[in-house]
Length: 487
Image (cartoon, rainbow, N blue to C red):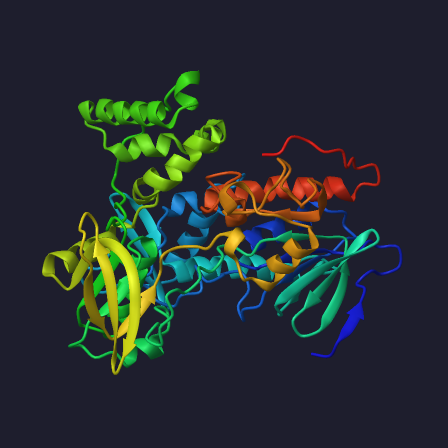
């Protein structure tokens, strides 16, 4: 692409708003912006990957990669809670039944699973759903206002009352503001090894030898997906999964609802008291023959308030000691995938280890991985043919993302609490080095730290509504730039 500078204004029309990242966060932001910006202002949706709308999470073509949230909670619209379920029903109505013993409804390369715990759809199918919403947004109306830019955005440069958006290919576009919606940041791949592979790439899987084990670093939901992917593409050998605590995600069950606890002020200001209260709620639920899942679900509407109410020292204690336990209880597997992982562990084909990764040494034909088992003083070594690192997401403070690094260097953004995400105001404007907000907003995983519930579909769809209102208000000539309290 040639180096060019362009303005998408037409006559008196204002410069567009750019949304950088076209996964779920960016897609929802773009759709809500179209509904709330002036009818003559356009939206640019920028994505470096080939496919818009799905992001990495929903781009998978593996029908065994299931959503870890029930379909009933996956609508893209807060005011239309059954929108995704209705879409699924239309898909299901046009398809015949499925294979023996499989309660799924086929849809090309994806499916729908109905279980006692609820309906769970394949993630690729959800990607199709998001793509359909984007297609409608791009083609709707007499004058299309949503424009797609398939390029990597590497910089945003202030220029008087606007920003100049710079793409890797050299394209430069004037924008009135930008929404940072890049989703989860990549984790640095350390220690380095030539035996590291991409767990979502079937080409790697096809070359694996069945008599030599592979190692997955991390034991969360991405580990579950990696195991499912390896088996789907024919690997039948030993899989070893390693994490500091060796905990795997819990599985969704059918659980009766539990009333939201009425926490005392003292409980909301102490992680110790808060944990004690939650444990008592779980015990009370058990006496009423209600699974703990109902208690955790009851906390969803107040989790952010609880997080923000804790002193920083207690937030740090949560991150250091309790986060793995919260994640495995809060972010659960769909029943079919949970059952598949349980079968693997019982058969011994999947071994889950608790320990700290110490070093990786490349040798001829394999990597020698040294780890220290949890509670042990002496390290142990594994010989593996491939390493798949799925430990989770990176921090803004450590990111190598070129756009974020440039914005941090310019002082337009800064890392938020604990370096996890970006510093923001309650209206989702991003704070720079001097506590001033540029014409930048964010949502989704980049809010981590300032908020806690910021990665699941139900949370992000609500954030998208609030963000669109904030951006629309800022487009008004009388919009106030007075600072408000930071989240």
